Image 1 (cartoon, rainbow, N blue to C red):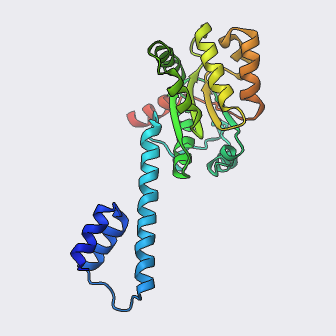
Image 2: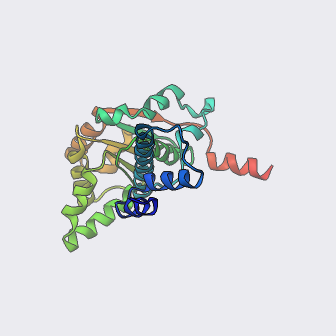
Image 3: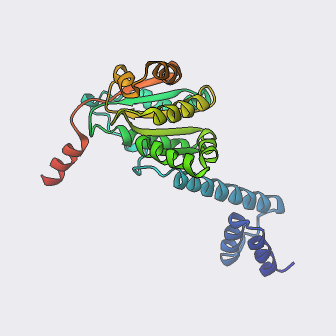
Length: 247
């Protein structure tokens, strides 16, 4: 088989890693010292790397993060109460394998959403399925899904995610329908997958947001029971960065 035919077959089979490596080495003239086994190994390794890269890109795109963030860019200022050792352990994603949750609390602007996105991005790099939502918008969206009959499909999609990041919990009290939907989300994920929840309110105030004792007990028992807590402190990062920019 001629080299052009080999390249055409690689394209038809969508072996893009092999295709680009083979094409590049043809243009540069393949080293004569490469054995057949070494050439095959190089092509397979290129295909593997290419597929892994494309998979990670797909996972990051489908997650729809609020911020482009990474754990390497986090700032561990003393006043932030952010434990670098703890974050590095989170970066290993063992908490996902153990189906544990992370509850991130703190006042406005201290970096809760950014931290959630950074941990989610890290999970994507490790090959986990992740989705990011503003919780209030998600609940409103799922209410509409109930009306048009697509609710079961969408709730099942959430259940399949290895990590679900729910941002800005507690901005407003929940109504009856929101409480039940939220309970179903948390119940479906309990002891099967992981959830990151961010909130301006301390965990002790979450009962008031859910606003119904029985359902609040059910939700918080499942959320808090297998969770790590990160309570961010300090001044708003937005204000700090604005001052730095102005200076």
